[in-house]
Amino acid sequence: MGILWFGGQIYTLENEGEAVEAVFTENDIIKAVGTYEKLYHTYYEQIHQEINLYGKTMLPGFVDSHLHIIGHGEKLLRLDLSQMKSAGEVLEALENRTANLSEDEWLLGEGWNENQWEDTSIIHKSELDKISKINPIMLTRVCRHAIITNSKAIELSNINKNTANPQGGIIVRDKTGSTTGYFLDTAQDLIKKAMPSVSQKYLEQIIRIAVDDLLSKGLVGGHSEDLNYYGGFRKTYESFKNAINGGEKRFKAHLLVHHEVLPAMVEQNLGYLDGTRYVELGAVKIFSDGAIGGRTAWLTEDYADDTGNKGVAIHSRERLEAIVKEARLHDLPIAVHAIGDKAVAEIAEVIQKYPTKNGARDRIIHGQILNEETLELLKELSVVIDIQPSFVSSDFPWVIDRVGENRMQLAYAWKTLLTNHIHCAGGSDAPIEEVDPLLGIQAAVLRKSTYNGEVYSPDERLSVFEAIQLYTIGSAYAINQESVRGIIAENYKADFTILAEDIFQVDPNYIHDIKVEMTVIDGEIVYEKNPSY
Image 1 (cartoon, rainbow, N blue to C red):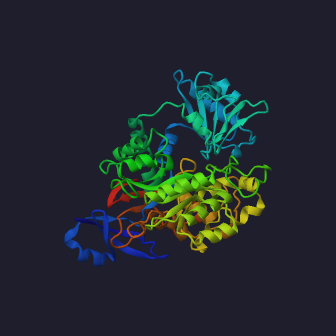
Image 2: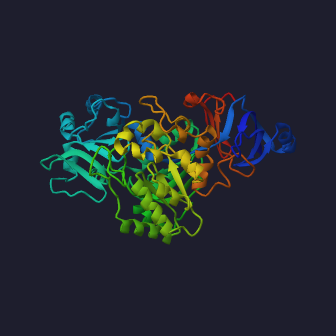
Image 3: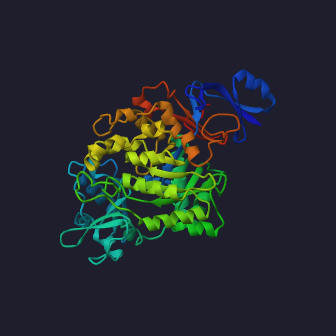
């Protein structure tokens, strides 16, 4: 028995502007698209429900190609610092939160960003010590490549003047060699290892909280990286399977596998796209550099505002190649965090040297700064670039001070990538950015800074059609599922995002204001804003 959907704008996204009157779905599959009259008469005996969209707009279901589902859930529960405009505001919020803490309980904050403070100085551990010497404090920067801690957290981590910087990380120190409480990239792990472990019950709760929010944003799925941070592969993987079991909770979670937990996955005889109907395993995740905000993204030339600093390489070339060869041994693609042009160049070279043999697609996550030589190499590779359009809104104009005007021509160059037939997928990197795909689509179309309202690199703006494709066919292509997901067509999955307005007719400045009316997964309504349909 099936459902006939009709009465609205139904865009297939197979071609720009292509729309149909009706869609007939049966179980989890689109059986046919066409006119209402034809589908009604053809499938009359199989139709058990008709859903009138009443003028709303149906699109293929949005999928976030890069986020952190557990991190997003934690952001919803933890102290959110992302909108605070000064260090003083952050400190005041921490002071208010300590009243409800038990002794030795960690005080955790998410999303601080000194680039939106008038005084961009990083908070010192001594300022956090004034708030609490009993409770360890850890505040995660918006990019998640840096943290600030107090002395209690440092003490619990056994870090002292003699503790060396780990490969790919920096313990920031003052002139006397004492720690300031500021830890960059892999140095964060020194602090995080001292934190108490979380229970599987907690993880399942956090995943459910996150998924409910994602569904309300019109997302039918997401490619997430969580498996190395919450007690290991088995515990986190089981938490996902229990939380998204296809019964009371549906969501298509595609989980990247951090290289450090690859052995645990292999031990369970699991491989690429293995899993359940709603939780599947993906590429091997590797970090190759840091982030621009903390000046740890790996650049070919020095940072414009920090002479002598080119950022950090998380792995040596030898180690990076060893990780990739291990992935290939198990027929796995890789998904590599690479922001700076040097990082992107290096991973592109490694992919060229060790290509996949089974058609699985490698991914470069972010790819924010490119150079001409690397762009030419990318055109030759079967690689997908996971882009985060919202980064344009939040990173400009301060990113220009970091990397310099001379690198702007190929910075956040989404249109250039598409014009050169390099496949891209769209995501948010939540909790770093807001998870709302409509915000990402708007950012890709406008390229307008949320700080000053100016448009940056207007030639790199995407059309609304191109921007939506990032979150539909682009996300499907990245995981070799473009033949069954990403468009509204016969034999494709019945995953839909239904909007209150026609996104192709709305002023692009107000795309983010469009309301999500319904989210449909496998033909079943899993979120409904207005249950009167």
